[in-house]
Amino acid sequence: MSALGIDHNVTPASRIGKDIKSTSDKRVARRPWPGFMLVFASLLLAVSNLFEFWHLKLNAPQYPGGLRVTLFTHKLEGDVFEVDGLNHYIGMMPLGDAASFERSIAMFAMATFVVLGILAGTLPNRHAAWLALPVILFPFAFVADLFFWLYKAGHELDPTAALSSSVKEFTPAILGRGVVGQFSTDAMFGLGFFIALAAAIIACVGLVARLRSTNARGA
Image 1 (cartoon, one colour):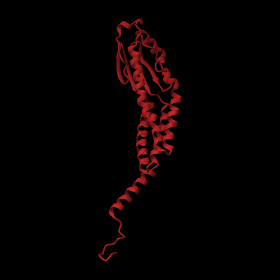
Image 2: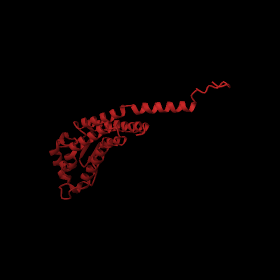
Image 3: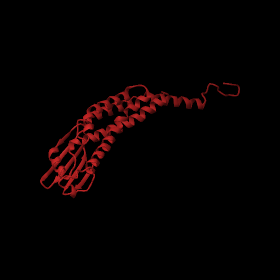
Image 4: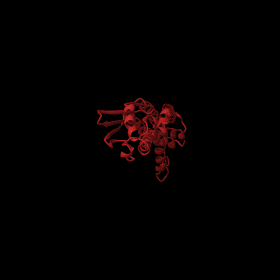
């Protein structure tokens, strides 16, 4: 303390503020949960592949119980043959022809996305966090691709089909009730899609948090 009664050992307020900020940044940098979220989201995406992504029920007079088709990322199940038989009359393409390439590579693509997401959560480099983007974008890409094929199927009708003249170009409903001539459809996303959507949301939060934590430590 000086003769004027000033204690020179007192830490200046500006230094205290810097120390608090430094401590806060270190705490953010040490948080492991952003990486855990990215890894968890990736594993959740893998689980989504075990469940259906989209349902379609076709209601027709000759089928009182309706016909059902279930779409997975890599296969079609249900009354595919019967639905194709009805679609043939209005000139629509067979269900198996729609997105056949996407289904053929789905298992490999999903495995790749999962591995990239895990790497995004475990690699130390801040830019590695961007590897989780496929996990985030996948459910939205699925919806876009599904809509594309529904549009294509309803707008590229075979003009030589028996009932082609009675049906105008249309886009089958991707969600909810749709009507085509004397038929109606009910469409709904399945459990697998909602699991993938949850994975995308978790991965998005984990990505932002991971980038913030790496920024805090100046990576």
